[in-house]
Length: 269
Image 1 (cartoon, rainbow, N blue to C red):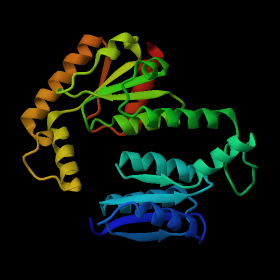
Image 2 (image 1 turned 90 degrees about the horizontal axis):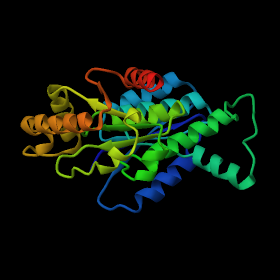
Image 3 (image 1 turned 180 degrees about the horizontal axis):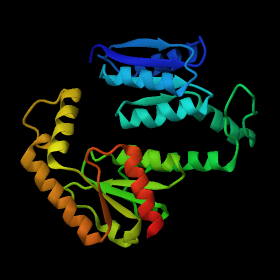
């Protein structure tokens, strides 16, 4: 793959650590070329959003960032997922691991915005849970989850999982695939914590076509075939009805709006 762009954001003028990690990771792959595009002094959520927008307009690409500002970290983490852009935080995992090793929390400095309270660590745990259970099907994970999202591919399950995790909820998401029909464990948990995600066939057809174009997939794939999409959505609807769970139509809804609806449903159940 040529002209793959890696957008590197730093809150300072230095990029040595990020460049070293990228170079080492890239050495595990052959036949691929990439171009680094550096952004120094990224200290605001607005600047992070600008970088995400630029990356989304120049796919294929990814974002690598290091920041002690929580609003910048959250913006990169959540908004990159919404835009389906791979994103790597090179600093936070190291700080968190050192904190565990030292059995202490990072030292608070006025110029930094590390959150040291229990809410922060609960959110980190929830985000890790969501990432580890993306497309998760184990019964133990389903039983631990506060929310279980189900739906066909490209119904915003992963971005919603991370956004809800950011709010402190333990979330599992499960794709509904006609060919596999592996949904038995969904009937072993209370239906009130399962949320089905639906979407209009036309909108899903558009999203999948755009995804195929981005990934360089040629025509002929069932994934973006309208008849296949209709059958797949009908299958998903039948599963949701059998479970007896609530469903939300995400067509033309932002992740934040859908998340708000999910939280309202969970609180009223």
